[in-house]
Length: 147
Image (cartoon, rainbow, N blue to C red; front, side, top):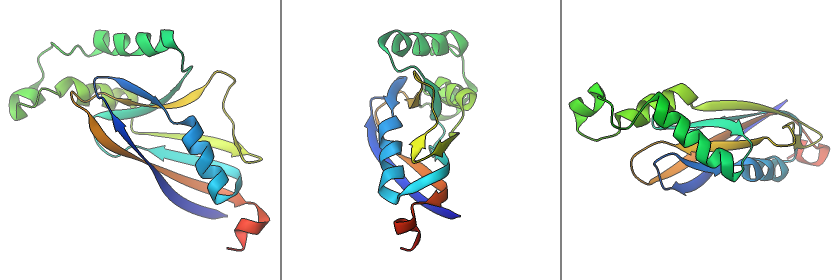
């Protein structure tokens, strides 16, 4: 059993920006030669979250609208009153989505459904430089296991 921690760096637009991470995570599995196990994906910070969706135009519109109904930007937030940063809704939305996701993989491939992609949703009210931690645990290809 091997554990490797790597990361993905990206720039987001904020305001419920949805970024597909699936290919980048698959590339990390390939880079490190993993065959079977699980990938823990984690976003540090309190204004972004991770989930899986069908990454298509309709859902890219529906998901932010759903979060606007659940935690409206215009609602009163004690966080905003305390810090005057205007992102109380961002913290609430991110806490509902959660900062991590675990995805199994087998034969070097993520075990996702046909229409399922791993996405980061940045809820902050401004653009951000983000890094996403990907910790892969499992068996590696024989040539990588000896490294």
